[in-house]
Length: 367
Image (cartoon, rainbow, N blue to C red; front, top):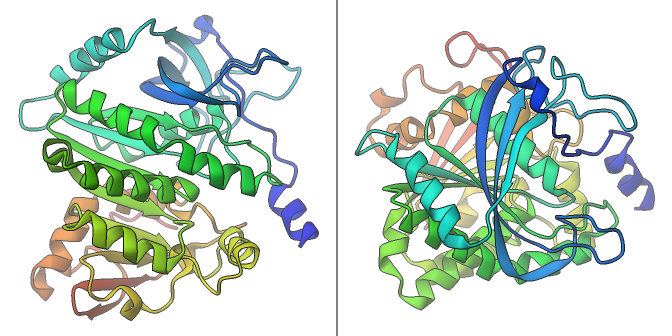
């Protein structure tokens, strides 16, 4: 098992925030609004570390997306080498808000730039083994590659950012529930008409726990603003997911779950937790047949660890940008599905599973 952990950790440089205002004008810019419960490390001085903070801090990042890249690709500046804005993700601006009201004002201004009726915020919740920079740059990459509109918001919870830190991260995901609820409340108060939550890995468990918490609190206004949920490779026990969904009640629509039978990280998680399966490598749709969810099986697209297919494959990125179309197609008759998605469809009670095939999928995009 140790060798599996080492393999999953293999040799990619870790993300770092490099502020380079001179990169302005080199690449395209994505503005990311961030809420975080990462505290300052008292030993190293790291600003947004694995240390758990009981208060939520708010940040704005202006991320330069390099022109020399392919969809799904993120390149970090190499350690001890000058960042190259032609090929590397860098920051051209960073602001830490002194108080939540300042964050809310700027977020509200960004939301008002969207047309009334289209004022959507996309809230991204990163997964296991992510540092502050990696989650932020990942959302910037998704925002650019999806080109789906809306204001981008990132919740950065205190992951240890270490492949050997799984137990720490599972506890941190539970610790971080109040912080995510606080951020969602701020997004709603800033004027978002719709909130789409996109969560990855352990971030999916955190998201479900937070939605359960909001439902129990009776905050119907906030729940009504959540217009959809996308769980990518969710690291959740299936029985726990069913219990969470039951307490939430009516799930947001669309509610889409990306799964893969070749997800090595979830296979390891299942071994560590003594379970056969996690929600993200579920093979039998009947297990969740009574829930109004759509499962998209990306096994045929899986490469590497298979743990973030939806964010790395150009074809799946194109599909993710049309999550509302996907849900509408499966909610309607068969004619609405024609040409939208390549694969075999299985509908059981309320749930639908699509096993995606690696062919020319949408608009000529290859996997």
